[in-house]
Length: 225
Image (tube, rainbow, N blue to C red; front, side, top):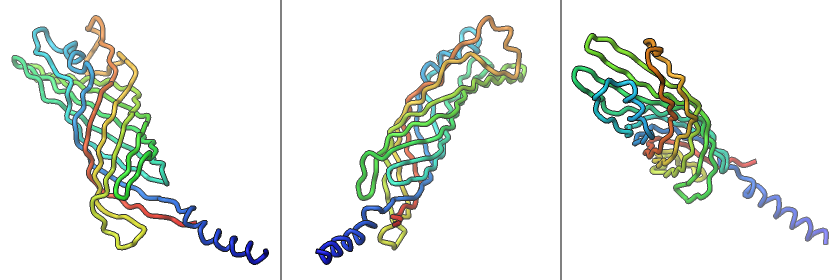
């Protein structure tokens, strides 16, 4: 009996490290894509002269992100900068940009040999900027800052493995991102000129859907206790 118990205990000790292995590592990416900021065009027309053309809500985006992985948990940071084409009318022009910076908290819900999928959510800050160029070379810049929350679904694919170690991955990665940015409405515009001359300032919330492709690299491995 003692011999049987000793044998079972020995087998358990031999199997425990395999079950207790921890996947750890990190990755960094550059991203590019498209974002639709709801009502961004209509809001910009509040600061444009009468007769200005309609402005769209679509923005091109670029940014960077990085995260640390511990088993199924993802913790990271991400930034995005967005810009749309300049709107010109008569001898004036309006440029529109936006940016976000958020924390990323995710959990891997499905994983294959070379890929994994995880939803993520993260608080942060966002800003919308409007720059108006007038005929007398006057430039007026307006900013709207607000808190924001980024909710996304992410898929990361391991492309090439530069590591010769059996239990490690180190190489290029491709990421697919789809998400929605949510922020509360605000009319607290900051400007390089006096906004007091306007009867009322528009309330705006930096809300919008985005899709992006991220390209970068990472390193992951199994850590035994």
